[in-house]
Image (cartoon, rainbow, N blue to C red; front, side):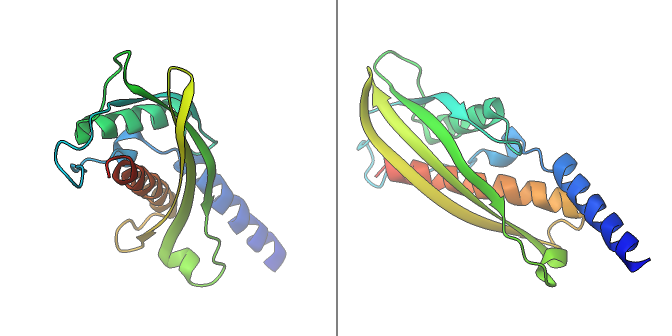
Length: 167
């Protein structure tokens, strides 16, 4: 009997994770202004071209989110002389805590590689890792808490990337 109950709980948990974790563009977009450390320092504009997502983050949604974040930062353009960015979402994983943490928070780690290039010349690769957590107090429902933690992890990753390219 205990085995059936445990199996049922595990199936429900994984089903809720699979259904409830599709990240949204709004949740992953950096909405605050990330500006260069020295005003007027950044003369280049950027736009995202290719994106590799995963089962939790759709490639189109991620591309739109990063392009919108670039727009908010004031460095978005699709002009011919702008810098193109290829985004590869290497890792987006939950931190598995089988103790009480699993009930009280959701924590996700996002590892993304950004390849910046212009006219087929690679300018640089920027690898960014970000871990974020959403607590039970912020979002009480587990599947929604996981989605918010996923979005927060990617939003923090994109924010770190923006800070890196704007220095």
